[in-house]
Length: 109
Image (cartoon, rainbow, N blue to C red; front, side, top):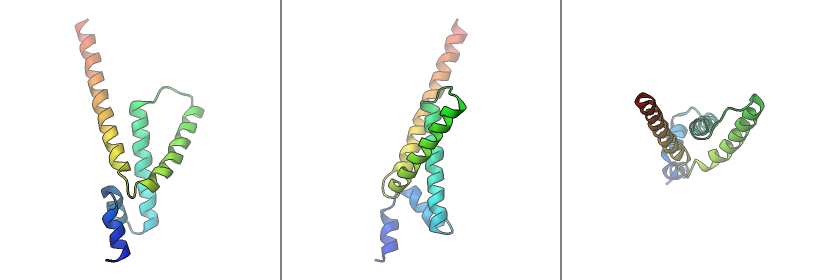
């Protein structure tokens, strides 16, 4: 078995799909980083974000990017993207339930 097939076989699905379908490995690496960064920002926004000043938001975005870079290296052989998708789905369901409860409480008063 050649080395490239061995690596692809051990990758998690999102990383494997990106690396097999992008024109070269550099573009695939940037695409994987972008997916991780966007999902991290979504999870942050859904679960933890508060109204902050522009400077504080810029610092948070820088730390999300730095963390996303580290997570990109882990995403080759660990389910990082898949975990972020699940976290985002859980937070979306929580926000929907919270919105429904607020709407029902407002209607009953």
